[in-house]
Amino acid sequence: MRIEAVERRPAGRIGSSAQNWFIPTDLPRPHPLRRRAILAAHPEVGTLIGHDPLTAAITLAVVIGQVLIAAVFGYLGFSYWWAALIAAFCIGAFANHAMFVVIHDATHNCIFKANDANKWVAILADLPNTFPTAMGFRCYHMKHHSHLGDYNYDADLPSRWEANLFGKSVLGKAAWMFLFPVFQLTRLGRLKGTVPMWSRWTFINAGCVFLFDLIILMCFGPNALFYLFASFWFSVGGLHPLGARWLQEHFTSDPAQETFGYYGPLNLIALNIGYHNEHHDFPDVPWSRLPQLKRMAPEYYDGLKTHKSWANLLLTFIFDPQFTLYTRVDRSAGR
Image (tube, rainbow, N blue to C red; front, top):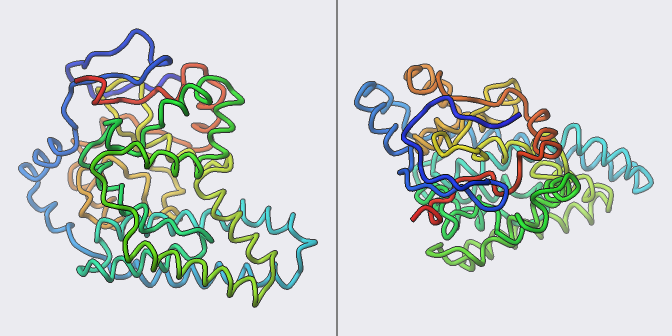
């Protein structure tokens, strides 16, 4: 299955093979343009911009639920590590993935008005991950929006060494998907103009998460911590279908459409992260109102190509030779 765009705009400069290099383009980022057009045509969309404090309550409920499940596996003991692994794949991954969406909304200050309140919710959501991610994500994610598809600023683009080493073979792409959390960390050193990673909030984040890990270990034992770590791993990679949402968002063979949506049922437990065009157009609209945004401006979204299944996309990415890690738009290459 080749990724193709439905919405056609003047083509950028496309190389002869997307498999050997990123796709260069000099097209402007589409999202600021569409945002202005939507607000001009539908000014009522502006009422969706704001905050959703209910997200904090959902976060607390999911974290408590993950702790309770972890406690059960801790009680069973480490001889039931295999059961913890299965539960992490089938249940915990979805819970932790939802917490990543909360971290994402908190980064955009879509939960509370105050920055610090959003940071504390993000840290709460980060606790089941067993590894601090929230404040690091906050440091580089805004550049993903302001410099979408620019290798020098957008950490969402794979590094060239990733694409060369893992990006073309079936085994390489499968390994890349399994180790996706590791690769995301390795990209930060190449970025320009990001907020410094090491700040007071970075240490607060790390301290809270590692203290939480210690409490889980001391109170419930190693199998409880193993369940949470496996939940974290499967929620962002680990060859789990949820990992395909990273592919869904911006993998494309044509710069005429570089952001894709997913409107399937998993949005119910993934907090609407599949509404990715809507989010990039209006990053100040909370996750809970993105379906309303789509309904208010259907003429801007209904014609865009979408993905129907994360599981199918994962398999297609791994086995279809048309997909490589270079199947991405790079604005720095188009200049």
